[in-house]
Length: 328
Image 1 (tube, helix red, strand yellow):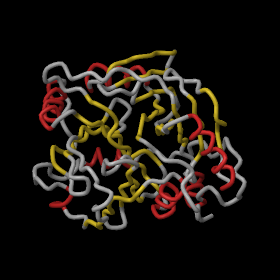
Image 2 (image 1 turned 30 degrees about the horizontal axis):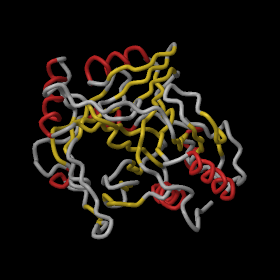
Image 3 (image 1 turned 90 degrees about the vertical axis):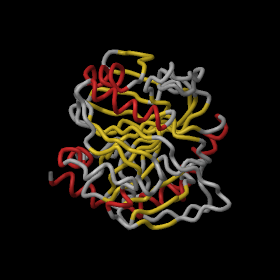
Image 4 (image 1 turned 90 degrees about the horizontal axis):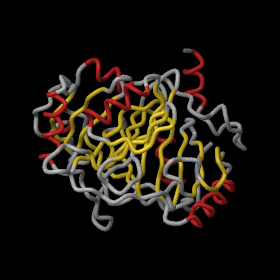
């Protein structure tokens, strides 16, 4: 099934939060709260909501599951009317909704809908959610501000990119050969990136630090807890952002980053970067990623929500991914 939407269904304002499914929720919550620098704002059994220093009610939600997986990705729309209009346009395109527009059953409340993309990922489009007052980091403490981006493994990078650009209105900022696509929804170089892979899964989640100084202090703070970077510190070519990758108690990859490139829509030229060590890390300080972090970035094959909705078209979901997951 190809996507030839005459216009996007909505205008995304920002990436709001990500929800992760993990077997060890308490251990994950303790890591992100006590070590990573987030603050726990809500708890409900084995569900936890954690915030950064920005204005979002939370940027990370953790929920119980038998294996690692993506719970959902939440994007901000301007108004409830935008949510309702998006629902009408999604229905016209035959894109399955997991939740019709209405009040959200979440700690951040708000009004929104949830749709399922062609690889089974649950995406939330919402408005009027609870906001909090942005807080300046106390002194030079290493506290993440917000989610910078989520990198997703895909079995079909072209179709994934088509869906997120044509349907959701994102723009491609850059390519890393034909291996990665970097997508933006505002002036930040990318909030979503797709990585061509054998199966669908979460590759990693990146958290933006207030400055490069906070970025380095974050690395130092983790080292004081006995946790060393598995790749980094360095500075990427695409996005020009700093990076340092770690793994959490569930072996999901988390990244500290800062100084993400800002895009001027009138002058930005999308380019294709070669995949070379000097462009993966412009500083030349990071060295190669460890074998363990490469394995963690591959993740576990995740069918997501594809079995819980019925799309209008029989070929909506990617069959290559389905065959791979079912074979394993």
